[in-house]
Image 1 (cartoon, rainbow, N blue to C red):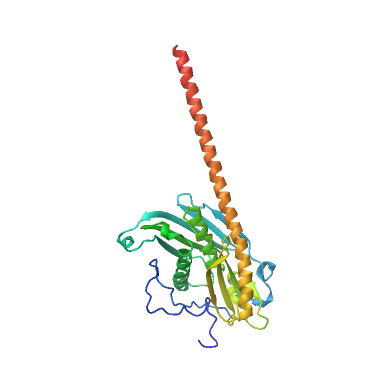
Image 2: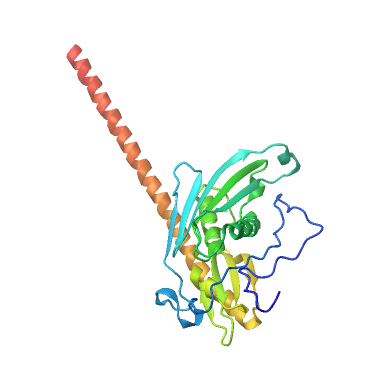
Length: 311
């Protein structure tokens, strides 16, 4: 790549796999694609070294909002808002699959990821379409390692992810949304999957930036790097690790530790949101039962009164 070209948003493409056309669950292998951001000139681009938007510290995340059960008609759903990044996930199923299931003892997870046309100020529609392939491929393999598909023989789940607004850290935010939606849909999993994104600022110093906004990503120098990490908090095991750009060993270790600590905190919030959703549904069910009991009691009293009048 020429020295003057801008830094890839996700780094070098995946190594090609000439002998592998599909994964064990039927998913396509990761796509060899490197999206390039259309950067503004240095005269109008704010420097990433000059401070963070909102006065955040380098290791500080943006405000995060998690809501399970956001779509009433879906089997499971979740809404994740990370700063201005907004993602909604829905799960439908399980359902029977066709002839393809006869050749597999495990279930299937069909994932669809899409970006709203108005989701980003910095990336073109064509770049979004190409990036969708890469993100969907990474998420597919990550979630297949978490969902217990062997317990859903000849069944399939449909998982849909819609990025309403892209303002940075879409991959790990989508992982959290998908995991919460699957848990909300009572899909059996080994654990929840939470994530965090860390950037290594290029140049001297090698400062780490946690949870960059879109404008920060847009202004990063060419020699910067990014690390996406997915963690199963209860098990303490990684389910996703993707990096791009030059990451020295010491910087890589610091980035992993920072991302792991952040993912653990996100995982706790995901669990709390799911528990609150269960409590809301239990309270709603209790109120419905109380109304039904009251209606039945009122109907019984009316019937008794009518019998007394007849006598």
